[in-house]
Image 1 (cartoon, rainbow, N blue to C red):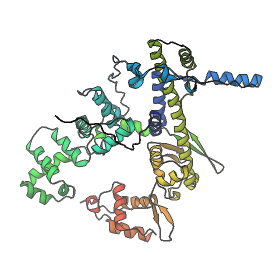
Image 2: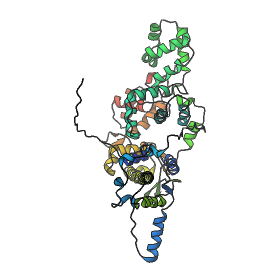
Image 3: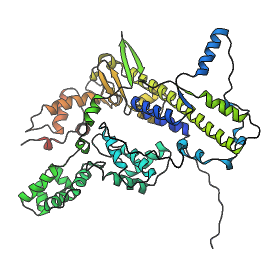
Image 4: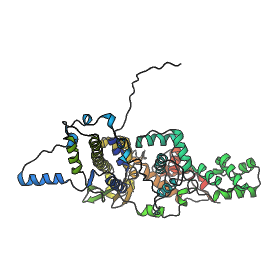
Length: 490
């Protein structure tokens, strides 16, 4: 029989508090989603109320009329109120250990009615058609939020697990995440959530009726993908041991596939996206002074319910509280804490966004004054982190999915970040300027004799931008242009 032993082990771990997790999530939300989040919290938490705090308004009136200031003691911060001794640990009710304090009988997983607004909503509606459990559906909907505009899930299982654990404060096994992702890949449209183009095309073919042409097409993509993308057709036919007609039929099956699954959605997704961008910031030029305004939209002022504070004080004054009173007091305190954390998270979010955007404006002042992209200075996340004192990860969250409206148009915040290059005069310039020149050259090239990377590098050199061919190749790939050979038209 194995001997049981007790050992002590010291570990250094970084664990976010619920309030800190709340702030991190708030930073990632654009203005529209924040408004939805506020409305949800107002419905879920009765201790959170809309409008100005009546108590503060009353105090202000009294100060104005009597020039007196009365001190109010918040029961949540009263040192005389020993909450832990009031309620013992062994009397913790069930609802204190459940998120949002829903009862076990509640089921909020109503199947949503599709309004034809976003591709993500269309995918989320399919989650309820699977045999996933409620926790699995929650994870699946989070995963769907990571699918890009083309319909790809360009994140590894390990990356998804790490991000989910950090954002949701819940650990999930790699195998469970992989299982959920595999189920998502069976959603409509075919090929959605693929990691890359090869997987996307193969997934679509495997969902088609099994024919000789489909089998050959799958073989081409699985075994000869590199030769296929580089148009080495003779090698493929030799490997496949088929004639030209058979090969052409297989290729025809491939060309009919959708390289961007999101485009297969028949709703007005793309149209709505393009016309419904709501900026998170407004920048106005007032006689050379750039004025920044944070878009708070229809988000109301919030305050903690005075009635709930009074109820907690009432329970505090009881010398011999019953078990029911203890449970009620714990419930009230949990709601008051949640309301206070939520209000503080919004305040911190707004302060962080305002401070970060102000730093970007100061850094790119010339652009905001003139609107000429050649005035954009090289700027990386670390530059703004140094100016604001925030961590680079915070700057990344602020700049993600946020937009700013200027007199020259609406721009995503990521537009202002770019690498530094040096021109022939030794001046630092943004790589955005170089990409603009490359785009103009490629769009105007002779498609029967397209410009390869060496010729593009030489062209840039004549314009005063001496950069290496490999750098040209990197920028070309970032802009989505294939190599010259694949841009050639017969």
